[in-house]
Image (cartoon, rainbow, N blue to C red; front, side, top):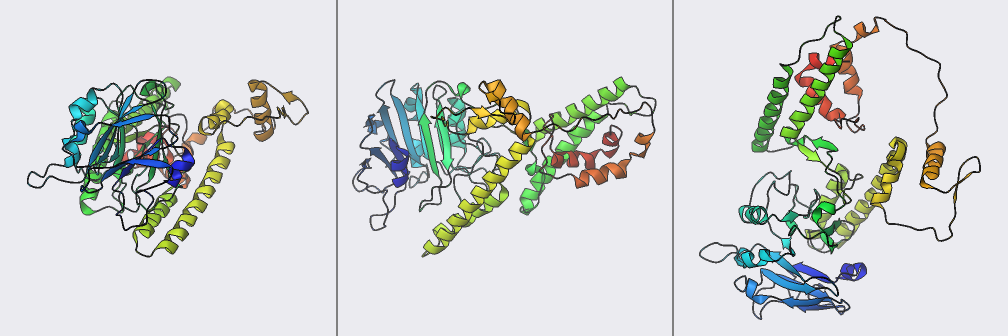
Length: 459
């Protein structure tokens, strides 16, 4: 609740608040008033309303009458604009005999008829519809059907919402109707007593199509092709995915003629384009596409994933306050280090107008003194173009002019063979920045193992 006070939240959706004898501010707080379940019902879904909020909040009890506090429906009327329906969900409890989950007994047909709806909470559901790295499908059909039937938008990113698990766990979902736009994020640096992350979202208005996200594919994730560190069943599934991708790639190569010393420049160009299209087509069909958005964290690493798991385990251990404190400190130090390294790498590799892309991921900071940017020669850069040129000149200086001109002809290409290309690929770092085709070195190494001759003849 203190985090909510610091962030200025109007509402806090709480799932499974702690018991009355446990020390926890989710049961009461001077800055909030609470909407709780019926007297005598187990506490599963509560909503805390900021006493300074100007929103008018009304609980719609008829919509969740049969849920016994496993779901809460609210009508929220902001000071200006239309009202919005917000549903708080904890999808765990079952009805004794039928086995039906109580949260799923809400009147969802009426709820989803509203033009502006947000459904958020702990769905306890695993599905590749919202988690491409899910290894199992559990409690998913109801939520998959609700999303598909009513064209709901899933606002979750690829970040885990429950830490401490060995699997990539995304079970706390934020859904909305198509006419709602949210600024959604996970505050991974705010530690709570729960193993679930703090999820924050702000209603912006407009449509999801206008949100700050890119539909351009920036790369592919082929981790699903690897069985390393996975169970026997998962290894079998990964192998099947890899074989399917390999067959798809090799089928495309049958339509391309082999190159030799008599091939023309046009034929070489056609072969190169065909190879690239074969790779991209295989990746689009058998790998998960990556897309950047304003919530993406390019500095996130596997080391941070492991540190977050350690923090989650420390939180759940009894009398583990000291361990949790140490784990939290280690995580925050690693985050600061990762951010610094990512920023330095960005400065080294940014080209042209790319230096301005960082502005999309940072808060606006105005220089109230109006200090101008001065380049190394003392010239004042005022316009954006002048500032860009000054930054590029100061931090990305051009190399000395060269006089080398390649001579025509030559037989150096004859020294290029399978062994040389294999050696150079092995030396390439898997984390090296990809070229304009977005195919990284780690992906290229996989294609190399599948068709060495085809790639070698184009080098």
